[in-house]
Amino acid sequence: MIRETIISTRSADGKPHLAPLGATVIEGGYLLQPFRPSRTLDNLLATRVACINFTDDVRIFAALVSRNRQLPVPLAKATRIDCQRIAATLAHQELEVDRIEEDEQRPRFFCRIAHSEMHRPFMGLNRAKAAVIEGAVLVSRLSMLPPEKIDREMAYLAVAVQKTAGPEEKEAWDWLVEAVAAHRQAKAS
Image: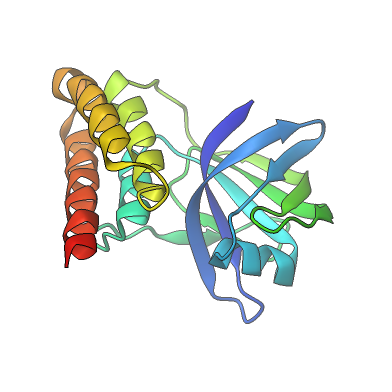
């Protein structure tokens, strides 16, 4: 099973970094597979720690993949490892890398859970939240997927957003739509 999360890592000099990342559940922890090149990959190699942040605020996913800096994401110190977590996350898990398997495209980081905390209750999802997450995955792969696939899937996901979104989901969706348009404009010029 893959859980769509926001992972927080830090550089060797302590600079925090947030990125959406699908974390594969394995016995005792998670398998993380960031693409090359990425700051998440560099940070995991340098520090061998990370926090998985479980959030229902889909604007964070949309802001990170669309490079939209309109959404501040306050951070807090992790409890047991030298890393930061999202301050307003529902829950977080602190990870330590046990083993790394090299790969040219996506190295495999086998991580154990060093600490888990719940911060506030999960009140459920609506279809728009799920659609924004799927849209964020598409936006993160704009340079890898054909434009027709992006258009077809975004059109399908837009139906759920139109039917069930609240203000936060609508804002996040707009950022994703703008990111697709900006990508196409940059590619055309």
